Amino acid sequence: MKSGSMHTSRLTFRPLLKSDAANLFMMDADPLVMRYLGNNPINNIEEVYHYLENIKQQYRNNGIGRWAVIENETNAFVGWAGIKFLDVLTNGHINFYDIGYRFLPEFWGKGYATECTKAWIDYAKLNMNIHELFAITHIDNLASQKVLKKCGFVQKNTFPDSTHGEEIDCIWFELKW
Image (cartoon, helix red, strand yellow):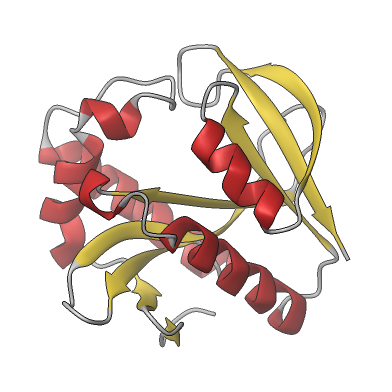
């Protein structure tokens, strides 16, 4: 999926755009949002522009990546969610699809992470030639672990991850069909 959009009853997903930079900066500069990611909140919007270029490269190379999540009722930017192809060795795996999401705090606790995860699982099953997805959460991120389990992911093991810089203890989840 390189363009277009996808919808659930409450959310719209679309490719991230340069015009999303201010919202992405606000999200990734928030210490609450970054608490479980093993990296510090960002300090300048240039980091967002670099991040957006990486996402656009994912779209070009893999036809998939993290997408903007927009609340249908208010048209508000919620955050991002989607499937990303990872070609970096992680927990003994390489060249796999990871599902993920990140939201502004005011949208936490509304069930959006579950709604996004279910939508992207459905997308993967119907539109991608794959039979498994993976997910990684910080060992203390109980809310994210609950979402993944609710969506059918199975916890496999814990491992130290340094993908984002600082080494953090994570849990590896798998979903196969």
